[in-house]
Structures are given as C-alpha cells and as structure tokens.
Image 1 (cartoon, rainbow, N blue to C red):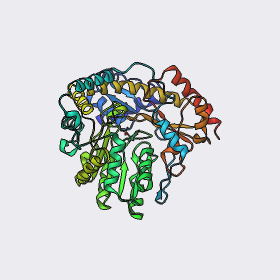
Image 2 (image 1 turned 45 degrees about the vertical axis):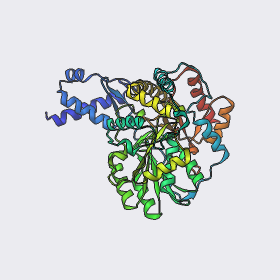
Image 3 (image 1 turned 90 degrees about the horizontal axis):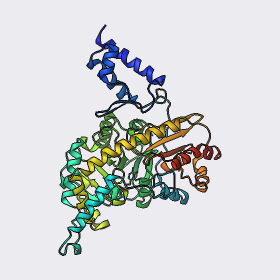
Image 4 (image 1 turned 90 degrees about the vertical axis):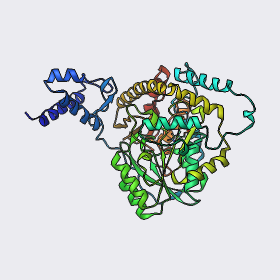
Amino acid sequence: MSSDYRYKQLENWLLQGITEQRWRLGERLPSIRALCQERGLSKATVQHALQRLEARGFLEARPKAGYFVALKPGEMSKSFSRARIDAPRAVNISELLLDIMRRSAAFDLLPDLNSGDLPPGIVALNRSIGRSLRRQKGEGYQYYDEPAGDWRLREQLALHSARRGWAVSPDELCITSGCQHALFLALMASCERGDVVAVESPGFYGVLQLLEQLGLRVIEVPTSVESGMDMDALETVLKRWHVSACVVSPTFATPAGSLMPTESKLRLLGLAERYNLAIIEDDIYADTALGTAPDPLKAMDCDNRVILCSSFSKSLSRDLRLGWISGARWHDRIQHLKLVTQLATSRYLQQGVADFMADGGFAAHLRRQRNELRVNRDCLIAELRDWSGDVRVSAPQGGLTVWVELAQPVDTLKAYPRGLEQGVIITPGPLFSVSGQFTNCLRVSFAHPWTASRMQALGRLPMLLAGSV
Ligand SMILES: Cc1ncc(COP(=O)(O)O)c(C=O)c1O
C-alpha cells in the first residue's frame, strides 16, 4: 500500500469519526503515538493526515496538547448569506444603532455585571502600573510625553510583533489612545472628505461611525465568514468606483472571526498597488488567536501602503485606552495628527505596560486567556448548534465572537428592545452594515465565562428571536 493511500485512508477514517461524533466538538483526538499503534502507521503518515484535517478546518492543533475537533463536517459547507454590493453612499447611523453600539461595546449578553475576581494577568498589570506611578519623580508630571509615545513600550511592541513574524522598528510605531483612535488617524491621513472607503460587510460598526464623522462615503464589500473580504468582489468594486482606502481585518475579522488566507492577502496587496489604495489593517484581534496567530498583512507590505492599527483592548484591557499604529508612507502625517488630536499619551501607563511586557506578564496572560477563550468558544458553539431550526454558526479560531445566521424569518433589531426588557443584550446583525442587511443575524460573544446567569440569558435568545418577526 502506498503511503499516499495510507494517509488518505486515515484522514477519511478520522473524518468519519468526527461526523459520527465519536469525538465531539472541542474533544481531543487520540495522540499521534496512539494512532500510530492502533492503525499500524508511521508517525509521518499520521501527522500528515492530521495536518490536512487541520488545514480543512476540522481539527485544531494546540501546542503540547494535541489535536482537537474544531468543526462538525457539514457545518463548514453550510454557506452563510452573502452581502450585496451597493453604490457608495454617505453613512447615516440611526439613534437606535448608536444606542446598541454603546451597549454592545461591553460584549456581553448581560448588562454591566461587575462581578467576579480580577484575572491574575490584570492583577499583575495593575501592580506594574502602580510601580511605575511610584517611580514618578521630579517635574516630569508637568511635561507631555513625545507624540510617538514611550520608547520602551514601542520597543516591547516591536519585539512582540517580531515573534509573530513582523519585523518593525520602534521608530515605525506611534502610540494611540486605543485602536479606534488609530483607525481615525489612518482614515484622516489617507483620505479626503467625500472619498470612498471600502469596508467588510458584515464589518466593524466603529469604522462606520468614523466614516460618518469624517464625511467619507462607504462601499460594503461582501465578506466570507471563513475567509474574510472577498477579493473578486473587491476587484469588481475597484473597477467601477474610485476608492481611496480599504479597511480590512485579515486576522479574525469581527463579527465572524474570519481569517484571510495568504492568497487573498497577496491579491489584496496587488489590487492596492494597481488601484493606488491605502490599506488600513485592523489587527486588534491577533492576540486572541486560539492557536498560532498568522503574520499580519503588514508583514507582506513591500509597497509601504498598509497602515496597521491595533491595541490592548481585546487582548488585555479596554480600560487602558492604549493602542498603536504603524503608518507606512503616511506615518509622519499620522504622528502629526496624533499630536493634534491627543497631544500625548499618559507616560506612567505606558511605562507600566512596557514593564509588564518586559517581565513576561503579557505573554503569560495571553497563554491563560487563550485556554479560557477556547473553553468559552466551544461551550457557546455547542449550545448554539443545539438550537432547533436551520442555524448557521461561525467557528472562529480567534477573536471574541461568533456570527449566527437563522434561516427562519427573524428580525434581530426588533428583538433588541424586547431583550432589554428581559435583561438580555442582543447584538443585532444590521449593526454590522449601513444598508439594513443581516436582520436574521446576530453576534454573540464568548469573551466571558459561561456562568449560570449568562447561560440563562443565552437560553432566552431563541424565544426572544422567535417573537421578533
Ligand atoms: C474590530 C475592532 N476594531 C477596533 C476596535 C476599537 O478598539 P479600542 O478599544 O482599542 O479603541 C474594536 C472594539 O470593539 C473592534 O472590535
């Protein structure tokens, strides 16, 4: 029997086991050694079969732990609806959507709980910031920090990026007040009022708010739940309209957590060069990767036109209000705009975070958080897939949310006020578009542990949605 045939046989046998739920979602497969013994195969053959299943999205490799079931076959092929392409338009966000944005920024099904202990990573971070405060002396408090931000923090960020495959110098980074501020600076530097900006659809509502405020027009580009912005659709758009910038999240785009494959990234860079686009990469979810985070698009940017924006908000704390930007050919203008819009960033906060990173506290926090997020995600997906009717659920390998699409007629916008009455916050699909699409969709977060009250809130969703038609 050829080795080619053997790995395929094993692959099919494992796939069948997953389909028949011999190993359920989130469960560990037998070890490589056990599979070698049980199936009489070499280690290379077993590894090859497992890696192929991982590449197809059925398994997830966890360092030092083995291979785990990631998806149910069949779910992968169930396709989600695709956004439509409309002509560029001005953004006009309604009061209702603003209200939902304000509440859903908390990423929770429950309103403001404020309960539970602080995670050890945040305790350690607070200690670092406290130490940095106590070190303050002299008249430093009467001066602003330089606009680019604290050198040591930028150095730590550069080291952190290098570990992920992006070599950047601290000079190429500028500290901002969160990722939203970074996105704001990127749009201001690369676009003029009235310009058209391409965004993912469904995509991040914060960008839509920025476009509205900056007087920019939007064009929504269909975005796949699995592989991110559709490059064929983007090319169609670029052939038809003049677009100045494209905001994209190749690594775990919100709301579905999609991951852009390398071929699409290369195509995006090619299109950007051909049509002279600024690419604004929102990389905020990279550090929530449940496995290894892929290189950012910025790491492949030979033409110096990818502006990378990120922050600690999703990986560490939203309350820090610390982010960063690497502005490519617009970097000088971006630093100037940082000065104009913020003057400077708090020095003791930056120094505290730099210490926390240098001491290994951030890396340890990410390791712990990764394990917790994985449990939260698996639990959520298992619950959602038990809902009756035709329900599609994304299965992201990072990010903090899943995207849910219901085949039956529901209106998640109508369900939102009814949810509030019952103490449940629904994040309706239309929030992720400017054109009223995705009424039968919602985003559900797995950022928090599934406590009894959260499980109850989740359990109330099907009734709330059923009554929303
Ligand atoms: C995709 C995305 N980008 C940017 C932001 C804003 O992040 P920050 O809190 O760092 O301003 C968010 C926050 O929800 C987000 O989801």
